[in-house]
Length: 122
Image (cartoon, rainbow, N blue to C red; front, top):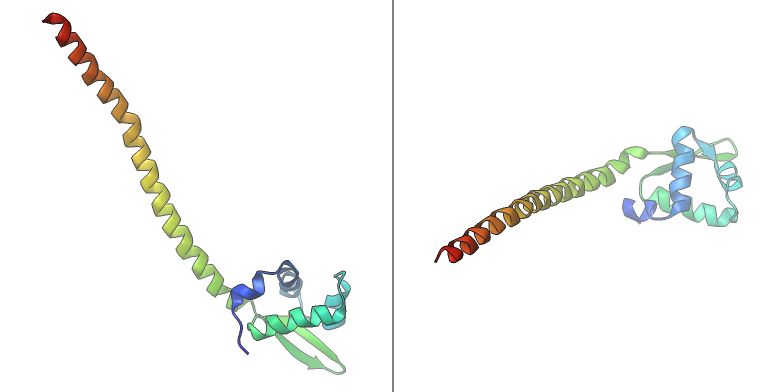
């Protein structure tokens, strides 16, 4: 079953596993030794990472080594970039609007004072 990359990085343990594997391939026991959970629990995390395409498992003798395939994270990076652009545009528009609002009260108060001064002349 092919899983979603976002599902893989949603869990802090899986993110930490990816961080470890980004530096060098490690066997399953070495990965499991770095966590306070059982080896079967780590195996489940590795399985999900494998199903997402973020990790491959390569047998070497009697050991199974996990290797990170971080190019799949480009999917996440692209999504984050789209969100960043969207929110930057919205925040820029809000900033422009607030600048307009800051200028308007001065213009409104000036026109009110003119009306008051005109009223006194009558």
